[in-house]
Length: 346
Ligand SMILES: Cc1cc2nc3c(=O)[nH]c(=O)nc-3n(C[C@H](O)[C@H](O)[C@H](O)COP(=O)(O)O)c2cc1C
Image 1 (cartoon, rainbow, N blue to C red):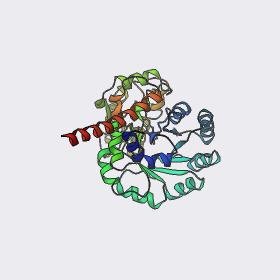
Image 2: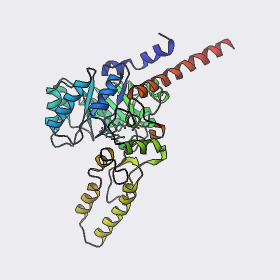
Image 3: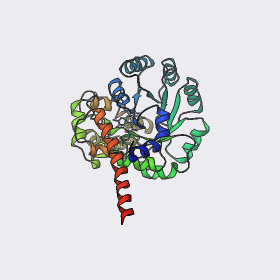
Image 4: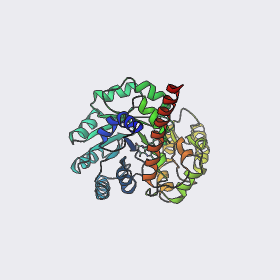
């Protein structure tokens, strides 16, 4: 084995052991996108696919897990949203179907949800948006953490991946920590591994995989977009909070600003109470991701995407994407060895 490969093996051994994979690369769960085909393709390619449960019922989740198990014998995980009204039943489905890793997302999970997930025998992974949250999750017994910066696609926090990595990686070594948000190339992946990450999680980069079922219009939007097109949702008035989501700008994001202004004006003129206004703002995006991903309505749907979208330039097989990430990390390591030996000769 060459030196670069040996070094990489060493850097991500903990992540690979934890996931049971060849590569410590997680395919971040994406609602409507991370279903049986993409998840199996990522796992079969040596990475770690994660099924997105989203708003699925326990029955649908069981079907999706079964279909994924039929397509891969490699490990994969299931991502559950903690706010799901049937969270306990979903955890039980994962247990019955012997899912090896449960990812609890969408807010800090309760200690009881973590315990229930662990009791199934699965390894439990949670998102830590800050160091205090990471410490709390460690006390609750999580087996690994994902730290996801604001560059990511979908629901986001406010802190950059690079800052979260500096705050958390040097301090947390009790469990493997995976870094997510804004990673598009192997060199970036390598830099987080060198800072102490066990592995990385990527979402945006996998949307244009040939195995991904996203509508061709959705994929074309990604291929055309630059990093600056993936922006957080705009909040007009702090009294009417908006859940921050990073997505490509389109007619829906532009209308959302006017919609908020209209609703707020109705509250000011007593045509609407504050609670109803807030509900209307929250409901604006209901069903919008599905509209874009499945129906292909890229103007009126939500084009959730991370800033790494600028590095998505064509449709590629999942194996090719994983291979590219690996090659870039190895080439960066090999270049360093070469420059070291040149220096030694001087
Ligand atoms: C279209 C889309 C949908 C997503 N849906 C979810 C989700 O349902 N649950 C979740 O935990 N994360 C979700 N994410 C976040 C990803 O799992 C992943 O952490 C993120 O994409 C990583 O950052 P990147 O986009 O910069 O690669 C979504 C991301 C995208 C782009």
